[in-house]
View 1 (cartoon, rainbow, N blue to C red):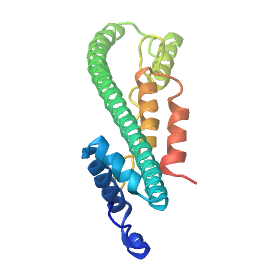
View 2: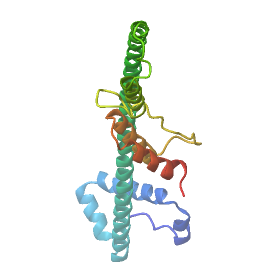
View 3: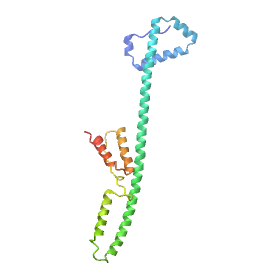
Length: 209
């Protein structure tokens, strides 16, 4: 015969894990029994106990199913978080490499420019009246605009953008990393979306209303 059902008051004191464990052990015991022995035991059970056992099994199936759904959802969440972090790290490294290349290129251009400007000064020193010529003023203005806004000749306007970051108690959230990844990708592509993305980041993350 099967074990007597636990007292309702004792059953309330048991946790869900305990009840599932007890029921699992009971099911395993039934599985280990021979088919004929199991049939004999079932035949001797009253209808009330059969209904009670059926209800317990259905409850266990429901609880196990809910637990499985929760665990699968947690797994998907962790996989997504891992993917977001990997994307952030990857694009961050790419931007840092591009910034390094841009910095080295800018140094070389500056060095060449300084050398050519010194030669130009020596040549212009022998040509009177060219210091305040219209061509000279135009050249200065164009250089200033290129330095401020960049140009189509390869200057990087947004690559060297500085992203403000406020250190919090814990690591950045997945949502924060997604926003930062978008900004970094736009910086890598020298996209005009950088200012708007940066503004959204400041308003939504750093200074939320």
